[in-house]
Length: 332
Ligand SMILES: NC(=O)C1=CN([C@@H]2O[C@H](COP(=O)(O)OP(=O)(O)OC[C@H]3O[C@@H](n4cnc5c(N)ncnc54)[C@H](OP(=O)(O)O)[C@@H]3O)[C@@H](O)[C@H]2O)C=CC1
Ligand SMILES: CCCCC/C=C\CC(=O)/C=C/C=C/C=C/[C@@H](O)CCCC(=O)O
Image 1: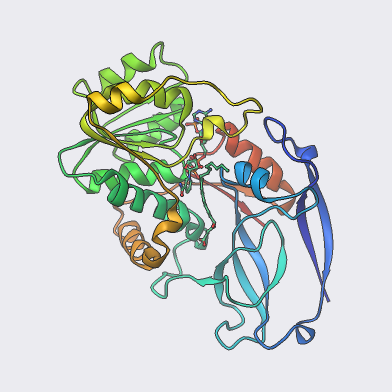
Image 2 (image 1 turned 30 degrees about the vertical axis):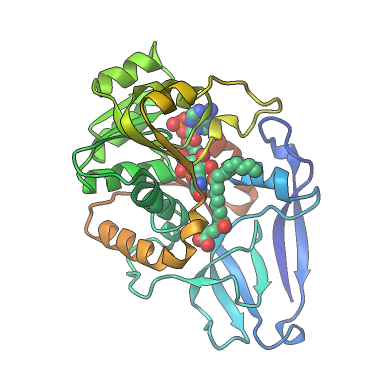
């Protein structure tokens, strides 16, 4: 008999999540032999904390449910010939140390994954966030060599890959992040210009200084006030990929913003929201490309690793507050 630990949503978040909104539970898992032929027992090794968990928990969960989320997990028992004991997969098991799956929602790591590469990257640079950067840039921004791209939350899981992919694609890249340490990191990994949006006296001026001729592409992870300012610095026929709006996720009362119509019309902009799952049928292609660039050293990565499953809520809250450099991960 295996006893799993799991984090439940005790109380729907009001404003910023608090540790008291979560409940740590223990769950006795049934024996695999009682569960049918294709069952697999898994043990989480790395868990992901992501911004989407904040709005999606509000939309999709009820109080008492186990927090939604993904992990890199090891198969520790298997009745399923497709999954051998000892193999590592990306799973949709929620915030749990152990769980049982029928194998349908498990994704094996690419067979070319080298032993030397941390498997946690399958939740970050070579996982869902990296793929968000890849498809958002190629399919939504449609970036071209010689263009100038702006990305915010630039030192995070998605943003850091966006900037580096845009450099690989021959663009000039400007990134904004919320600390001087993050700005230094962006310069180290090849961003042409970077600034701390929290300390500049005027965001408008800082954006203008970083690229006096404006921006062809804007990969927006933040939304709200930032996006309202940035849209006015787009160039004619610019493209805006609306990837996320983290500046709005913790609002109890919806913010009122500026209207976008004038710059949209006058500059003939394209603005398109997207969810990475639109390209689910091409994830293998994206993952293969990202893995190749990581192994060639063309994409650098950083992970903010929090030790201990008991610290899941703290890691999640810390990420929403901007405490992470690169991908926020919890190591069990
Ligand atoms: N559309 C899609 O399919 C997907 C969308 N996303 C979205 O991409 C964005 C980035 O996600 P991800 O890379 O995983 O997360 P990050 O690793 O970038 O972590 C979140 C970061 O957001 C920044 N942030 C938090 N609050 C604010 C604020 N009020 N204003 C500006 N920045 C803020 C912080 O960085 P800083 O210190 O710089 O403020 C923080 O580190 C999110 O909006 C997310 O929802 C992610 C995956 C898929
Ligand atoms: C309800 C309002 C929503 C506003 C926009 C919020 C968030 C955008 C965003 O961040 C979306 C992310 C979606 C991620 C989904 C991930 C999972 O399906 C896990 C997949 C992981 C994997 O298989 O590797």
